[in-house]
Length: 396
Image (cartoon, rainbow, N blue to C red):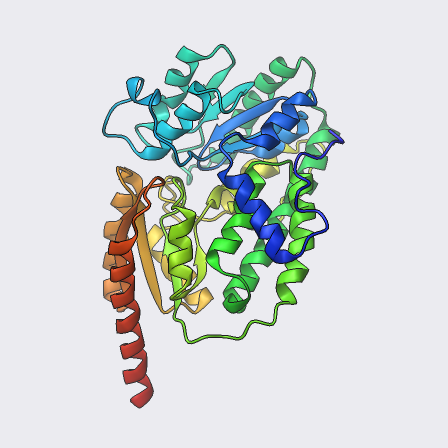
């Protein structure tokens, strides 16, 4: 589609670009989706954490990353159980209330609650609602071939919806575009890791999250504009500790919470919207079978998450590697309320950090929370302890 859906940032400086990104992310009317649909485009909504959006893009559809919202699930509460995480309820509320309109919905069985989401969704809407079954046994010799077949099934289901075949050229063009997008995001995160005083965690979050609301062509243009402007900033380093934020792989923490954290420390790495950055290397093009290298990259060239079970990538060891590579001094281990995968991993994370004597705090959040006093107090104590330990080491 030639018509852009997010032009408000054009011809603006970096601060104003970030303002426009925040306005878009917090707009519960989802103007970019409405503009896309008004121009005749179709929208595929997919739940967290990862979806092969290249296939959706190749079909000419807009892949929309459903991530919940800051609203009360007034209608969703009557369809879902009480003891569920907020993101499930608010995501469903968005469609029940008519704030977003989809042509297809896809979920992944990342937890007990999410594995039933497509069925509940499908009971209330006439468009296709399905589960994308990502491999649970990532170390099997047949995992790549299995996932390639699942991607092909996904492609065929989309073809039924758009009433045409997706060509190999379309898939390859989408792979190139998404390779560019992930490369730009890696550059953005490298800046945050190497010179965190130039860009805060909440600002990076804005530039990252907006990618789930607009076509990748537009997201690439935005990042290509923003990255040089970030590098031109003249901010000077402050005496803030370098921290990892772990726990934002599915439900997202409130933006104001990230701002509060950034005021007292540098978040040099995180797992926020990890699905958009899941593949860590360029996916090679195979014009005979473009889906195979995409499936291979998901398993062999990817990050880690509590919702993927890969014995080759123990979560605690991957976290320690992230700490080492980013020269972090401590970790904020956060978990959304009612999130079993995140809470389960806290046990292994804290054990590994205790064993290696890396400072950390454990906390929880919810996307709708607006009172951060407890966390700010906890964080202040944590930062003071880090500063004290650093001073002791310097004296030694």
